[in-house]
Length: 400
Image 1 (cartoon, rainbow, N blue to C red):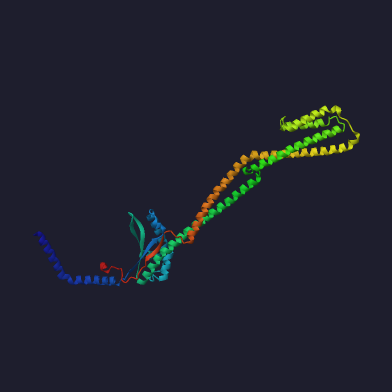
Image 2: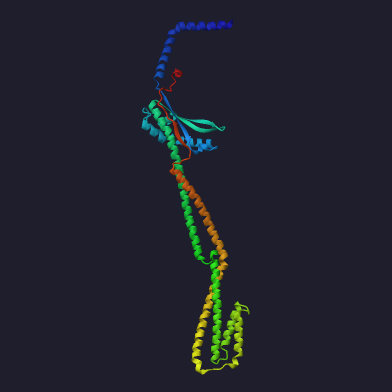
């Protein structure tokens, strides 16, 4: 009963106030409501256009890592599309904010608020992959709204293509720089190898067969030289004997020759055996030698010729032994020279392999750049924006 009395009293009090102050209330309501309605009605219409952009390329065929890669590329491309320079160019081209203070920073900030990027997703194999996204732009002019929206959508394809082209061009330039460095290194290494070959000519492993063959030829010539010297010594001894010499002049030379041969050969060497027999014969014939004065002059000339030939053979022997020693030194130094040459050629081969690998990568980068980065993640406009026929805002009933 007390609650009903309180409710009735409140209603009676409000009714009493309304009867006394209804004119004031109506006046206040009218003063507030009419300007509000006018303000809401006078608000400009807001139009909204929407375009759908879809990614294309080989990246979508990968089974893993597409989500992160696609979103990363989308964010990078969006940053370029919504950059200050691009938005400022659109504002100037379509005069989007004629009533603004012409502050580029403020205008681009306002335009970013009017642009909305809404990624779409599709369910594939239990994982959510970035598939497409909507580009939405709001403005007061429906035709401009549609044009600007389509321009922004097309910018995604253009910017993505330009970004990938720049990326491939940058990669190609980097590879080209590395190729130039490797080419210089290859040239330097080849120069080192050529210089080493010239400085160690005849000491390299691939030249040892020729060195051995040359040593055999020189050794054969040395044996021939020894045989010739032996024959000349015998002829000289005969000439001296024919001159009436007892053999005292020839014996020292033959004995000296015998001593030299024993340094290189054994006592069984044919020339050593022959020389020993010759010395024994000269010693045995000392008492039987006679002089013939009628042939002294021709014998002296013949003896001089034999001495000259013998001296020439002795000089040739010295040269032959020197050359044989030189070839022997080449053979002895060949293992060390071969190891050093293998070290140089191995470094050259490794550098050449790396150069070939980089050259292949460089050619691939050039092909990718020439084909505008085909195969990478790209974008194309799936649905262009249409000119809106109805306003999307403001929500006047809600405001009222």
